[in-house]
Each structure stands twice: as C-alpha cells, then as structure tokens.
Length: 543
Figure (tube, rainbow, N blue to C red):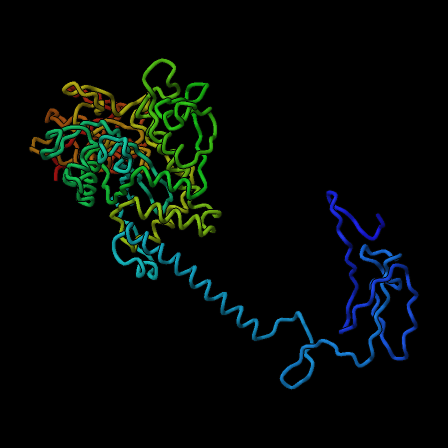
C-alpha cells in the first residue's frame, strides 16, 4: 500500500489533504508529486502555510505539499466595523462600561451572600438570646451582671433528649459552673456531680429530695414539653445554694450541639493525662463501630477529635468488667475533667483567627448553637460575652476539683440503697463548699489559708459576739465557735489572739485591719480553743 493512505486495525482510511484557505480560493486538485509554485502575479499576495516551504498534513515538505494560493490585492478582508463604518480595533483593555457592569454584578452577589449569612445569624442568635438582636448589635453592648466579687457566674448543663438510646432524656448528666471576671479576664470552672443529693423543695418524681440532675426537669414541669426557662431558673437557684455563688446566667445544651460545634470548627485537640501509662480506654462505645474497634482508646498526650469522638470522650467514665477499661478510675469525676478540657479546646478553636475568618465555619457554628442551645442571656449582652470569651487565655481558665485527693470537698455515700455524692461535712451541709469556692474565685490569700476563728463575748451584753462573728464571716473567713469568755477579760473593746504560730499570715493581716488592733500570741487564762485565731469582744467593742 502506498504511503498516501493509512490503516487502523486493518481498515483502510483514506488520507484527507488539509491546506490553508484565505478568502474564497477554489479547491485545487490533489497533486501526487511536488509542483513548483508559479511566480505570483504583480501585486498579488502569497499565503504560505508554515515557512517558505509548503508543508503536507504532517508538517513536513514532500510529495504531498500544496501550492500557495494567490489572492489579488483587492480580496475582501474580515474586520469588525462600527455603526459609522469604521473598523474597530480589538483590545484587552477593559472599558468603563464593562468595569461598571462587573462591579454591579459583584455587589449583587455580595448582597445575596451577605443576606443569606445575615439571615442565618439573626435566625440563630434570635433563638439563643432574649430581646432585639439587631438593636443589640448596633448598640455599644451591655455589661454582664456581676456578684459582690465582680464575677459573672454561668451555669452550663446538658440534657440528652436528642439521644434515642438515653432513658432519662431530660436529666442533666453534665453540670458545670463557669465563674468569669470580665476585668481580670479569668475563669474558674466547677463541675457539679450529677449524683449530688439535694432537697428539691417540692414534690418531684423522686420525692422531696434526690439527685441534683432532676432539678431542671422538676422545676420546668415533668411533661413531654417542659418549660425550659422555668427549669433553668429552678436549676440556677439550686446551684447557687450548693456553691455559694450568685448564679446569674444559665446555658442549656444537648448532645447534638457538642458534636456539630466541634465539626463546625474542624475538630479539636484535647490532652489526655491519665494516671495509667497506657492512657484511657472505655469500651462502652465500641458499638459505634460494630465492635470492630476501640472507639474510646487514647494514649496520654494530645489527641485530635472530631465531633462524634469528642462527644464519646465527654461521656466516658469507664466500663465494668476486666479488660474493658483503664485510665478512668474516678468514673464520673474523670468524665467531668475531660468535659472541661473539651469545653476549653472548643472555646480556643471557635475564637481562633482561622475560624472567625471562615464564613462557612461561622455559619455551621451558629447553626449548631441556634438549634441546640437555650440561655437567659439578653441580646444586648452579646458583644460583651463574645469579647470576654475571646480575650480570656487558656492559662487563665482554672479548674476547681471537688474531689481533690488531698482535701476532697465531696465524697460518695448511700441513701435508701442509691449510690450518691454528698459533701464531706455531711448531707445538705454546703458550708465547706462555699468557703472553698469563694476562696478560689476571689483570689483572696486569706481565704485560701482556710483559717478558723472563735469569737467570744466578755462584755456581758447578749449578741455582742454574734455581731462581730457576722462581720468576720462577711469577709469569707470561717467562724468556728461563737461563745462566751470570762467577764474579767472585759479589758479592751477587741482583742485578737494568733494561735496559728504564724502559719496564717494573710488571715492575721485581714483580721487586724478589720478591727484596727494588733494580735497577741498567747490567750489569757480561762480561754481554750482549737482554732487558729480567737477574738474576745469587750463592752466598748459592742455596737
């Protein structure tokens, strides 16, 4: 077969000559051999294909080269003409009209996108906060409510009505208090045991007393659709009674918000710090992978978690049975510790520059919060709340453990066959909790010393010791005994005796300033005490 044809899979395919066409030149006849091109007529233009040599279909000169095409000078040329008949020149330079059109389209797109996100924002925040969100944004913001120490105390609690596998859907199995100082930019976190035994003050499903995780449901009405705000109010009141803090705010969340919020920010990093060198293991969640994995199994150190795994860790407290758990010996107390870690990690990620600059992440985060969070915050407090959270550093968030191994404030017990948690001082006795929490959140060195004081009356006037004891208690110092002293000691308005041997210097300084007198080191005869300080009230020291 000659080289003027080719084949594919044995089929003959005729070659089709290609040549350039300028104007309307007639189709030349195919030439089998090269033909020398004729000299162009005077004034004619040659339209070569390629370089000076004509070329065949494959770009080489040879047997199938085509002759050049001759066109006269007056051959028509293609050109765009305007309305005036003049030729238009093509240019890549944008025109003013094109720029205006582009800007208009861009503005329309921004308005559409901005309107969408604005709608999502107002829809979410309208569910989250009370009041007019728009006016709140346009305003300068409103300071958060504070207690006598200048702190805003927020109750955070979670229910599981969105978990079909959870029996007690409206029980609050996660309870935490965040005490925030807006000026000092610090936070104290206190996890409240869900099994803490309390008095309800009314008849609930469990009776007139029971575990604290039923207070919200009882306060909001034990129905299929409980009154959320009523439940929050009752819960804040009970938490104030237990902690001694004035709890002004509450935030009610469900399981979904944690999962979706963590996913919205692209996951979080949590540090595992178990006492077990292997880390932690809880096989209660292996069903999520059809028992083909250990769903909650992490080594000590930082671990990255998505929403589902963060939720599982927040619920992990150890499984019963040999080989099914390790690294979670304190059960619920360990769970509360990791809940705090997860909350701090989520706060850091949500307020990071990368998240705040990502409109998609913000949209997902707002959606998660708006659909799954209920609070009693006012809309005008939004700016202050967000600004405060952003300014607080992780190192300034301090956890207050109630189960400290050296000085625990709560312990386990049993009531009517039920396993419970109670204060170490006794059932319903919260004085120890109050003084410890107040000492820590106030940052008062005297309160951290936890000194004990006896106030004795030598004046002979009834109520004199009680009046001074109230003055001491108001500072946060614990008054251990209020009693009488021999009237022979009625020699001065107020006398202070330091029995701590100098071990409570901050308390000593505070008492001396409070009563305007220096302390002695030895109590007079006739006075015995096991406390750190003794105050004797004389007649001139009475009100």
